[in-house]
Image 1 (cartoon, rainbow, N blue to C red):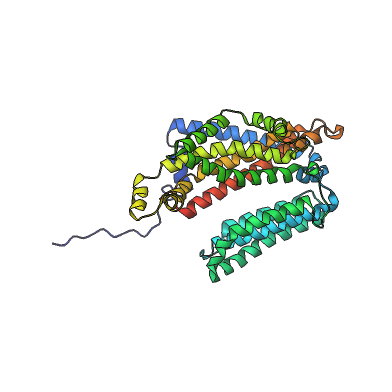
Image 2: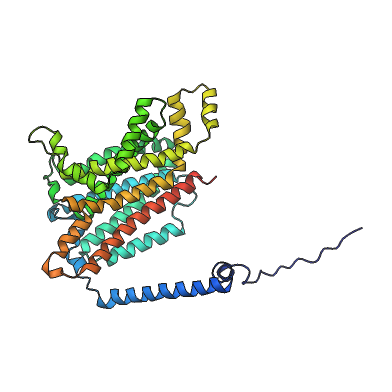
Length: 404
């Protein structure tokens, strides 16, 4: 007995079953209540957007931004030494491109559509920046350097994959080169840290604090899981005490009490004290994020490693900790974003970061009342940096397949 199957249709599925229309019907207009809420929310958002664009294009007086461009980005750093800051940007762009190229060396296409769209958007923003033409050309050159070094990094990574093992060491050395270029000395004019400010100081303190708090937080998380009572209780004591004190209190303690414990006449730099406060505070929260990842690792992993004859140090460093850090990536990056935002508190203790320099600009009689324009501008800057960290976190998660 044979069965005759109906002829298969070669027609494309109706547009109402797949595509944007089907998605909108399923998610936005599935029933009358959902449709009503969608219309109300979209109408509210549209009105807010129209109002904001109307204010930004007609009422707002954006002269406060181009008139204080150098203050926003470098504080009172000497204008004659700006070439050093552009050199730092070029160095970071080159190393970032090399790292990018080496890490994605096995990807068939380095510059996909999304990357090209992002590059084009950055280039357009750079061209439209209200800065002198030479600065815009230098920034475009730095972007080209990033792309060129990424292409070179991919070629080098394919030819010699061992290069990737040296990248952390190169980044470590680059910090001292960057510090030398910014601060001076050894042949360069010295620029006092009291002249640092704006975005330069915010990014510098954030990066240094993130780099320092990460190993300290991991050590505290491992210490809290330790079988040694002294190590475990000291770690618990540190974490609970620091988490119970507001960051602003820690910053005030660092600014006023640290000199009391040092010899007469020895006063650490304000920036150093701010970095210490941020590091101590963030490491306690980071330790709890990492501890959550450690507790998520099945005990069978440790038992299997012990059965292979690995000692506790190798079990932790090769088996447990890499998996825990992979699981904790969203929480760790969230803590890094929080640390970057917490740098705004530094202006309260006399450190002129991006928020502090904005307050100084608004104190100028020429720009009194320009609060919306100034704070909108720095809000966009903070959002761009935070979104970049979030985007990098998602890309790292996909690359490590944390969801599988």
